[in-house]
Image 1 (cartoon, rainbow, N blue to C red):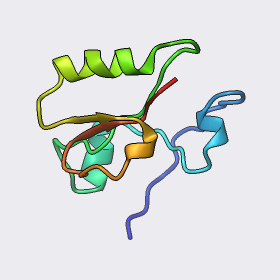
Image 2 (image 1 turned 180 degrees about the vertical axis):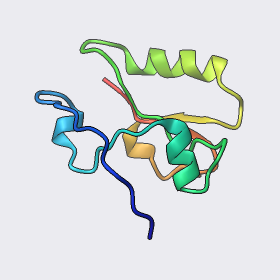
Image 3 (image 1 turned 60 degrees about the vertical axis):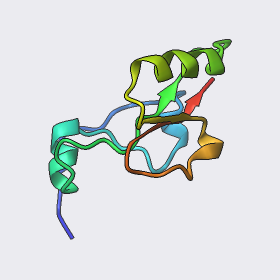
Length: 90
């Protein structure tokens, strides 16, 4: 088990993150180091503005991301964790 020090607290009333008790924010480089995953991202969560077309955004992302990256809505989170961009939702 590793111990981390809380450096700040974010006030997030009325946001999606405030509704998720598992939400935490950390510098990507520090998180990679802490979890032994330097240079590796397993998931990126996106929250689109209300009224956005999630499938249109997913299509745009698929065009610019490497072919081994999966772009999928939260319901399909069982995709391989090797490389994944998930949680494209509106």
